[in-house]
Image 1 (cartoon, helix red, strand yellow):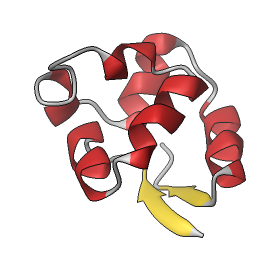
Image 2 (cartoon, helix red, strand yellow; image 1 turned 45 degrees about the vertical axis):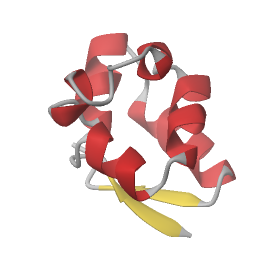
Image 3 (cartoon, helix red, strand yellow; image 1 turned 135 degrees about the horizontal axis):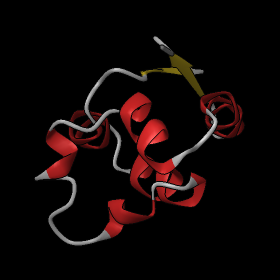
Image 4 (spheres, one colour; image 1 turned 180 degrees about the horizontal axis):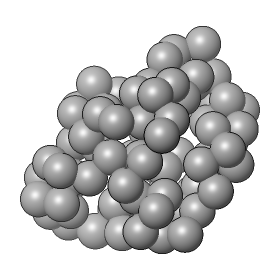
Length: 76
């Protein structure tokens, strides 16, 4: 499993692994695929913050990421 920090910026996570963009979109981070979102909002948005803003259950997000072989750590 590939570890992902829930406190790391979306910009940095996607820069390290571009496949995350589609996975996060499918999980509920719908705005992520809009042009420019990763290079602007993604520079300060984290998975923890995004879950709070989009009213997503972080445990469900963790489970969905696990299905794609990612281990979400640093959950607040």
